Image 1 (tube, rainbow, N blue to C red):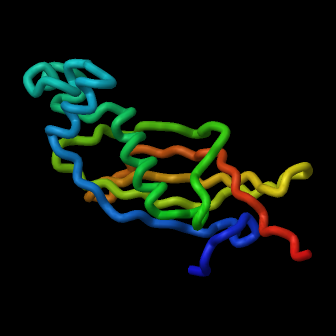
Image 2 (image 1 turned 180 degrees about the vertical axis):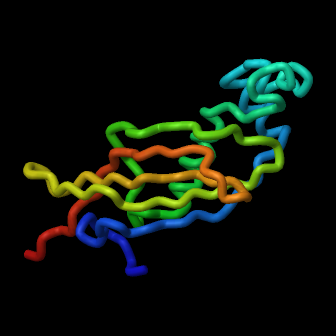
Length: 151
């Protein structure tokens, strides 16, 4: 893949794939205790009695992991992933202790700004587990600077 540095370096259909991260029971419980303290994220026995039928990571934990993996792919080259919001955020299935996650992204929208030296970029990211099952998806509305004009 060519080096991405500016909005003009991106193209529709361009794809990115992250490395992996394994989610531990400790990680799930630690995140939940701080940010989403519900029984199916904190207690194995209580989780068995829910629709999850076992301990499941908070969806927000999954979102944070997916964001971290997306940032690590550096889809905007040296520029940070700054955006205006997120479209299409969905949790498709629970993330369990021991799951190994990675994300794949595809550029699905490119719109140059009419008034600023930047463009809006939509990358549809899908998080998968070690079995190739899609567990989460999101499409951030990001913006990337345009190549500076030569003087």
